[in-house]
Image (cartoon, rainbow, N blue to C red; front, side, top):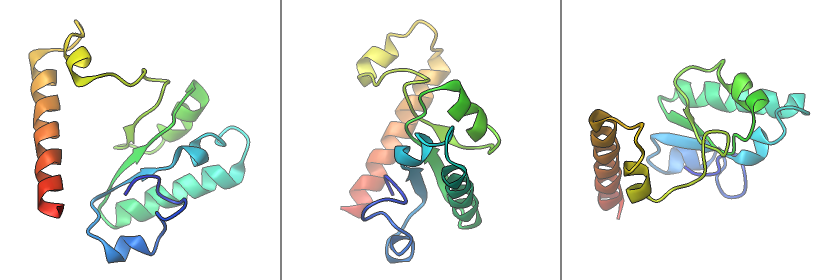
Length: 121
């Protein structure tokens, strides 16, 4: 469930759809440095998601302060410019730092995601 906590991605959807992961919206992450409310909201979303057995991705991480706050929650998947710019999959495979097992894991994850999408469609 993308952009969780905003717009049409609210709590009511968790029981209406088969959800196995949520992606915390970047609007919460953008305010980590300045808003206790945003930090509290992120903590609550992560706690609730874990209680329900969901994988949690946090998007929009752009600096070290945001990352350090989120590191307190083990097992998250992180996304954002702090880690790198979006890339085409083919460009990612050209990265000399990747091992063969990294590439195999990317392919396996991609195949699993495609299979899940086929089941939903």
